Image 1 (cartoon, rainbow, N blue to C red):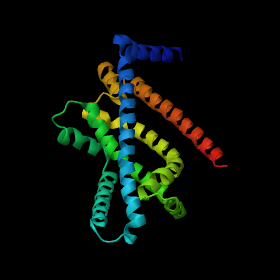
Image 2 (cartoon, one colour; image 1 turned 120 degrees about the vertical axis):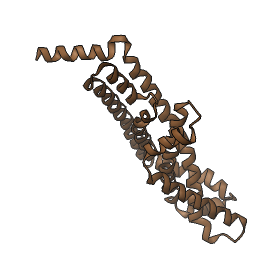
Image 3 (spheres, rainbow, N blue to C red; image 1 turned 90 degrees about the vertical axis):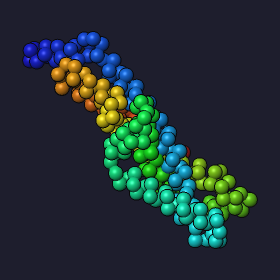
Image 4 (cartoon, one colour; image 1 turned 180 degrees about the vertical axis):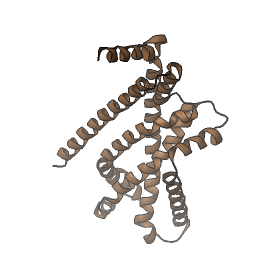
Length: 242
């Protein structure tokens, strides 16, 4: 047993202390969190726009009078459906490689590539989260907005969105957690994220167990932490509804 712990200590020192290799982990963690946060913001913006288009189409298209507005809404909804089908139907790692090797082939900004890929991917899922929230709002809320003299956009902004956002907030928080784990494939395109940091240490020391254990442990701690925050958020939302 003593020999086992001595070996672990030796491996730990070799992997993280020698030549300050622990900095690969900290720098990778910083990159992972940066990519996740920026991708989440981008995904929310894209998702909100798509949700508005799709929910507006579902609620109003049949009642709209013919004209350029109705035609533009139909085209926008068609494009949104194509986007959702393609993005949700293909693996995120393939989308990342397309971004890196084709769309941003001339760029050397790996973080920009990763944020674009993960943000576009996340937007497809956030769109459905927002759309479900908007569609769950009773039509009476729209009628109430019109009775107050609000137009459609004003009703969405001041009455529907606040209620929908409150109902989908826990789902959005869970999407952030999923996105955090999905970014672990960023190393496929030479981005030094957390997983890639562990892989660099593995390549330098020829030790597999310790770097992978450290990376897995850090992801686990982050997921537990953010999951706890989501649970607290859900409890507070339930209390506010009473």
